[in-house]
Length: 446
Image 1: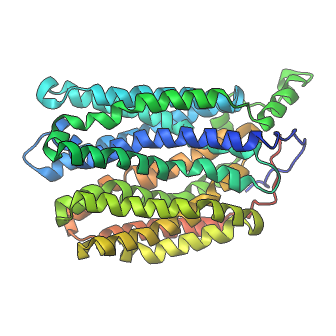
Image 2 (image 1 turned 120 degrees about the vertical axis):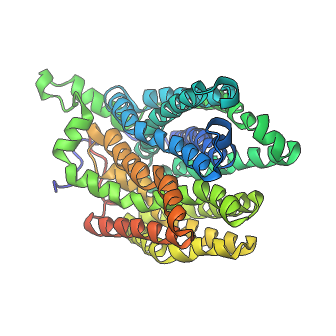
Image 3 (image 1 turned 180 degrees about the vertical axis):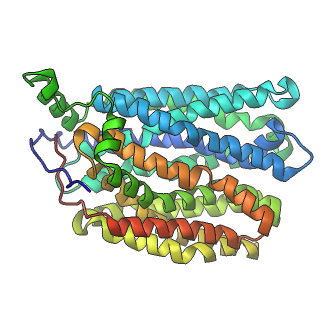
């Protein structure tokens, strides 16, 4: 594996007031993007199967809906290529504005779609198309958001600032739940299934407008600007360090780092998506647990993870990324089976407690990863490298997790299989983290 990059030129740091503003702007964007994604995930667990894939078998309808959920993960690598190239060649901020706009258009489009009853086969075709566009958007969002915050961060606080937008996935889920639950309670489940499921999708219009305004007010990364200045001053085009095709350069020069970085995040992705997507369908349909109970348990667990994210990140700035990520990986391996076994109790308090512990272990893994993955790659490939590692982990560990879990439970019919499946992927993350070096002392190079 090549040596980790070292600092060659020291870019001018942001003003102290700029770094928090950029971090908050990145958080707003990731929250909106993951709100859109979480709304779809929750809707696929509750209503999209019968609305777009009607059949006489509830399991088959759910599986079809979850496959459209997985479809977005297949298009995420295209988003890595597209937005990674924009972010590494033209700027981090430009890539983030375009990705947010694309997500907003796709999400509002889902809310306006006709169902199978109205449009026949055209309805699921349009749904899958818009879902693929959501995936392209997500392919560039996470890496750009945490990178913009990290590259603006003052010395010694990179993980802290990078972890702020990393709260977005859980916060987006909580926001989606805060819209879906009251809507269900006000109109009733029958009306929600019939038409009111569209409301959370259409509300994305307001959120995206706010997000675009916020992102337009922040400045470009000082590291990227220093890189661009360096390339502009190069005496010959061939002496520039700016790659024409960042992903190709990344695969050629850093294949081991890319694979290990992907493995380091794969277990946490499985925990996240099985908890906040799959179990919301599995609990009510297969175990008879009320939907509100499952949504509440996942929401409280997500809130607990958010509560410790910043303290964990700050601690990783002091003692290193790997100790905390390793602790989280071990915790997820050990707790995976008890967490999902709690579903067999059908007791809301037991499930909530188990999910809360599990999602706090997840926070130990995913809070430092926002700085850890970007630190593995040089500035000229950082957007593409961090995005590719995280998105591949999300695709392999999270995107197909609901579909795999549905298949596993169709054969074994026990929540224990979720624990074995998730624990196995978390073990992969543990082994990859053991193979990777500590990155806390590495400064961002240009």
